[in-house]
Length: 109
Length: 48
Image (cartoon, rainbow over all chains, first blue to last red; front, side, top):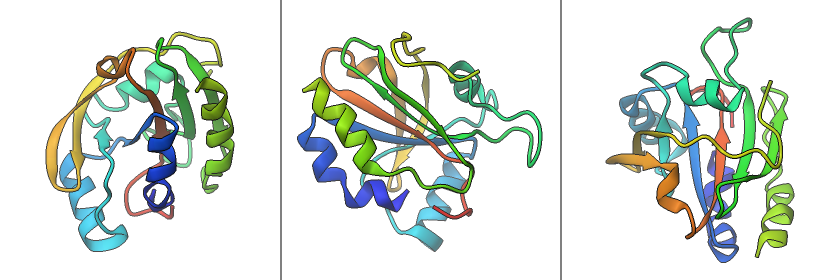
């Protein structure tokens, strides 16, 4: 998630708002930033209750191993009309490459 | 199955924090204004 923070100016330049989302509580989001990754300048959203509801809507809720109730690692780009311009699911341990997202955003602007 | 390019994004509104500042993130607030990059990640305290 720090990789998005480092590129926030580039996202802003392409008229894009970044939001991170996981099934953690907002209190966990705050503690994680304070004690581990540092404070982020973009929102972290909490898909905590009803648990995984947003992930389910996007079709990326994991209901099997390694841990039921977490989401896939996935990036969706929503354009200004509310349509998906990117919908990519990654290996759970893989940090997506922001360049791929920039290429999609450039085509929208 | 994950949604696909070209699908309408489902709206959602959930609690959020920016740093320590609590708020609500509602996708449709950005309609007509900004593109939104939604980064689903696995869990806090895990790498990346």
